[in-house]
Image (cartoon, rainbow, N blue to C red):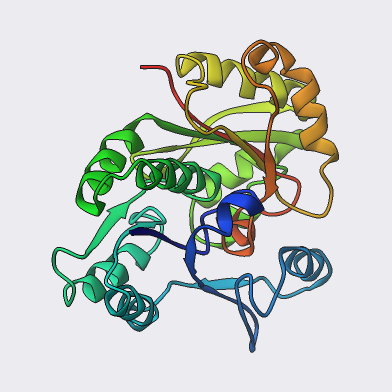
Length: 280
């Protein structure tokens, strides 16, 4: 049997997450430390994010966090594929690689070059391959190929949180913050890039739709997932309605999930995102 292991930044729906082994990361509000998804729920995190004057910081998973899970895999005689947050955004991939050195030919680590729902759809695809009976080595090789086709596109309410977290420059954040601009961002080679800016959410939704079309459209034979940050799905529901033509003939349902605290700390509340595999 092949287990699929992720860090807690990989966001997916509950029925998929319960099949994954999750290595948690930590989030801090000043001196208060919380284990992502364990000692703080996503809702509790966004309540604190909105109400607190303290900007949260996040910590990567340590090699020892992965080693504990890898020991369980070895004891059970299984093998595993680990899919981590992009190595350009966090040292978590390196931590997993260090821990995996003690388990050659049993643990295979893949840098998702993505984040949040992007890592989530890769993990869901890996579960499919495991169910088909593929070996851990073959799954890892396949996921390394498929990650090149993953697109994550998001509309943020503000660039302020990315600026505070040091993910973009102050100049870019200033331009994004002017005149109620809604920045649309993506991931390129694992790094955050600003794809465009729109005045208001309606223009932002249009820009999201056009960016999906620019990517060549969606491969509906593979997982598709939408996500949102904050306490309300209202903005996401509006986006689904505005972008109906993208999905209505191809998807029986559009699945969505709340984006967790580690990525939410950098995106801020009020963001919506789409993750999909592009048509080749």
